[in-house]
Image (tube, rainbow, N blue to C red; front, side, top):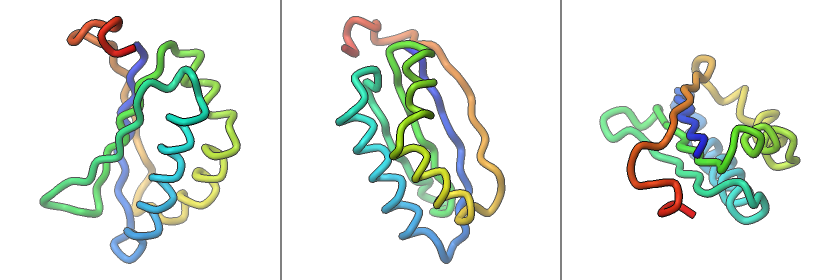
Length: 103
């Protein structure tokens, strides 16, 4: 599995707009992209302006295909102006459970 964690800091006054856009992107990803195994949107408890997107793809190519979709590009176009600072990302590989257990 190809696992991407995207760390995001949102402007406080844009929280609800950001959540709506991001949930739409996540929902579209899991329902229309066969290579997207999971797409979680999590919000930090002690600082609700901070989020992590946990995206799990079958392969790096599937993650690249995600960036070509209309829903991702729509999210990117609208979300960039809602951020308090540029987003960052880190790439991970799966350790447990096994990849077969995630399919």
